[in-house]
Amino acid sequence: MKKSFLPALLAMLMLATVAPTFTACSDDDDDKNNSEQTESQKLQYDDLDIFQRAICNIDSAGQLVRYEIGQALHDAEPQHLYIGVDDIEEAAKMFRTWIAPDVKLPAGNADLTAELTDTLGHAQGTIYFRAGSGQTVAEVTYSPETKLKYIDKITFLLNSAWPYNSGEKVWHLGDIRSFRITGNCGEGLADNDKQLNFVLVQEGGNGLYAVWAAITNNKYTNSSGKQKWGVENSFDKVFYSDYCPTRSSADYITIMLRENWAYFVEKFNQAGCGPLDASASYWINSTHWDWGRYYECMVYSSGYVSGITQGNGEERFLLKIDWLRDGELPLTPTGGSEGFPGEGCANLFDGNGSTKWLTINPRTKSEVSGKDCWWVEFQTDSPIKPYSYKLLTGNDTGHYPERNPKSGALYGKKNARSQWTLIDSRTNFELPSGNYVWKEYQVNGTRGDYMYFRFEVYEQVAGGSVQLSELQLCY
Image (tube, rainbow, N blue to C red):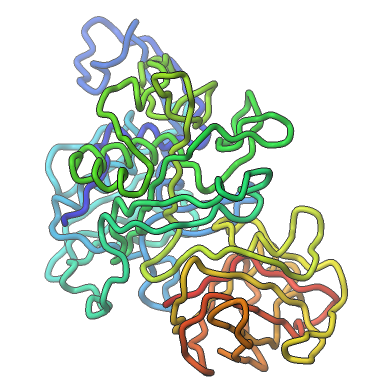
C-alpha cells in the first residue's frame, strides 16, 4: 500500500515549543495563506525549530535521541539521511509537512525554496528542495547560515533503489500485536492495563518508522493525580510518555485511519480497541481557539495531548509506538540490578532513549553464568528466534565513556521452567563513547525459540557503574 503523509497544513501542529507573534494585515493583503485567520491576525513561527523537530527527536539538553524520519546509509556520513519514495510528488508532499505554515512555498513538486524566519520575523536561513536525477528523486540542502543540528543533507531515493529491499518484511499493515506498556510509563497501572493490542497503521522501511496504534481502556493517572498520558507544557506538568502521540502525530494517525476507514474499523475491533466512530465527537474533545486559529484537535485537553472523549463522558487515550524498525519489538522487564532513583533497568525497554539504566550497587554472582555481573531479565509476549540484539549508549556517555559495558552475555529460554541457553557472549562490546549511539550484535551462540531473556554485564570500561539507554532484540 502506498504510504500517506500529512497535508502541509498539519505541519503547523508539529510545535514542540511555539512562540506565536500576531501582526495586523492590511485590508488589501492578498496572501491566500492567511485566508483562515480571523481578525486580520497573522501567525509567526519559529520555522527553524519546526523543521528541526520534524526530522530529529532532541532532548532538553540538545542531544539527538533518534531521527524521527530518514536513515543514514553510509557510516562515513551519519548525518546524511535517506528516505524511500515512489516519485517526486510523494517527496514534495513530505517536504511540505516539515515547513511551518507561515513560509510561502511555490506550487509544484520541484525547486522549492523555504525562507525561514523566527517569531520576530528575523531571517534564519534557507532550505532547498531540488529535483534529482536517476535513482535520486530529490535532495534537501540548506544555506550556510541555517543553524540546523544533526542534519547534513536529506536524499529521497526511489523505493526500487533502496539497498535493503531484498529483505522480507516482518510486519504488515493491519497486523495486531500485544505490547506491554513498559518502564516508568507503566507506573501505577494494573497489570491487565499494561497489556494492550496495537494495530499497525503504517508499514515501516526505507527510512520510515512503522506506526502502531491502540486505544486504552480507561483514563490513567499517576500517584499525584495528574493525567498519565500527556505531553509536558508550561501550564500543567504531566508525565511525558513516548507512547502518547503529539498533536501532529495524533492527527497523522487519524488521517491514516480515515483513508482506509472500513478496514481499520474491522482491525481495531479485532484488537479490542474499538469501536471506532467516524463522528467528530469521538475524536475531538473540543474545538479550540489556539494562537489565532480554530483547531479541531483529535486529543486535546488543557493545552496538552490528552484523550478521546466518549459519549458517556469517559476519556480514553490514543497510544502509538513508532520508534521501532521492522523486526524489532518492545520487551517487558522482569527484574535486574538496582539502578539510581529513576534510572532502573526498566528504562532499557521504555522506548525512550533519553532515559537510562545506571547501576547503583556492585556486581553480584550470577546463578546462571557463575560470574560476578550486573544483570537484567526480560521477556517477549511469545517465543521468538532472535538473530541480533542492539545496545544504545547513554545520554551522557560522551562525558562518562567508562560506564559503557565491556564484556557480557545474552541468555534465553523457551519457558519459565527451561534451562538458560547461551545466545551470545562478548569479551568487548566496543561501544562508542558518543551519546545515543546504537550498536548491533549478531548472535554467535545457539539460535532457537526463546521467550525469556537475561543480559549480563561482567565488566564496564572503567569505574564503578554501568550505563545503557536501550536494549532491543531483532528477530
